Image 1 (cartoon, rainbow, N blue to C red):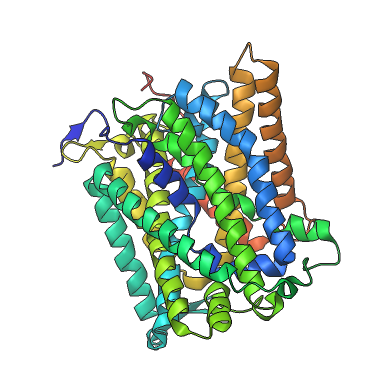
Image 2 (cartoon, rainbow, N blue to C red):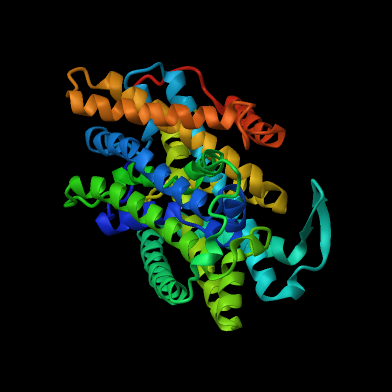
Length: 450
């Protein structure tokens, strides 16, 4: 039997928090889904969608920066919302944000199979079944399972191991990105950007991209999930710095990649192509080596975003267990590794199950993840407005702006008349998660607050 420790290991510094947040945010969407971004908005619509989305989210990041110093709790949204609202609302906020992070993990487990299939076409064989018309191949499934086992292992063994791994792989991606961005910029042709918007209405083009931006910018708020694992000598201002640096770096990353890729070749020729980023570089440079280089960089990115989201999701599950919203066994800490090992195993099991669904999960996951993030941000901003009794006018204005942005983004996702709003498959995925939450939820409050 595994004995339990009282606290999580305290080893993280500002660099680790930055790589956690940025690594949680930027995955492989810039390779696998950039064709969808261009189809939605065109070059200008996609760039403006991400730029405006980042600007709109700065008030939300500000609120998280205030909360992470005032309430250093791994539950983050759970603790913030529960501090001023009923306990049930804290559970809803935490369970939705858990899905926002955890839903990314099977996405990446599926994506590694797609990437390897592109590099080694022979792996897209041995179809074993189909989900919603999408084939699931045995080699791809095994690759997804292998990656999940690896992520599960390093997170079970300790935050020091997983955060060090996150550092190495994040900076490897940034170095690779800087190299192929500079190379790509030298081949940009202005005429390739025409038409700059995908729709006759520039506003519709931007809105269609704004609908998915929350999913791809989720990650800056990962910092509070590991706040209890901060090094004893860490200046709390380092936590706030990591939040804003990650959000800014993420926005810049996406805007630059869209700018370069859509300028390398006429963007409409790649708007419906798989792996449009690699394809654009391949056509512009008439070389396969640069496309393979980009695919290798994407593999680095895939693993780090899997790891970052897995860490964040497991800490939320841990906090829900520790606070007895769900079974308190989820809140136990491994005595030797000082990790929330039951929560880690739970997240691993959910990832295994999600991976079995194959390609069919990719688009619904993007949409549902966006909605869950938005609701978490909205509840956090509302909690901050109520929590600060004597709030300064400037702070109140920023928090109101954050809540307003989150509220508008929510309407964009659920209002039926808006192009690209949630459909039946997205609501089905969300409904199944809520049913699971209700089955695990314990309504009775704990005798003591932990």
